[in-house]
Length: 103
Image 1: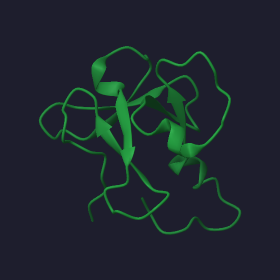
Image 2: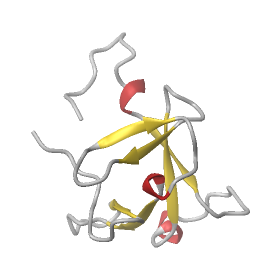
Image 3: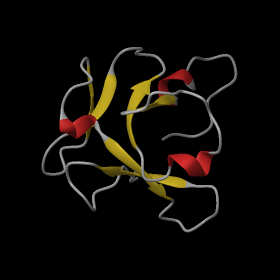
């Protein structure tokens, strides 16, 4: 996470991800609330076909070229900030561990 990207650069692409439903037969978007409790993988917009995974023991996030592996699956849960319309990403393999940003 960084400050808002400077106009005319490709910086926003490097901070954009696509949520891919892990076990879904339909990609039809109905209501964002329908996705709470579902498993997703994160695909970086500037690295199509690759996924975000977390390392073990607080090793941080990494980009992998495979969709296999439990460390690449995140559960979409209601936002930890308690605000309506927000979501958080919880590790499927380490329950209670969430994607976060620290300064």
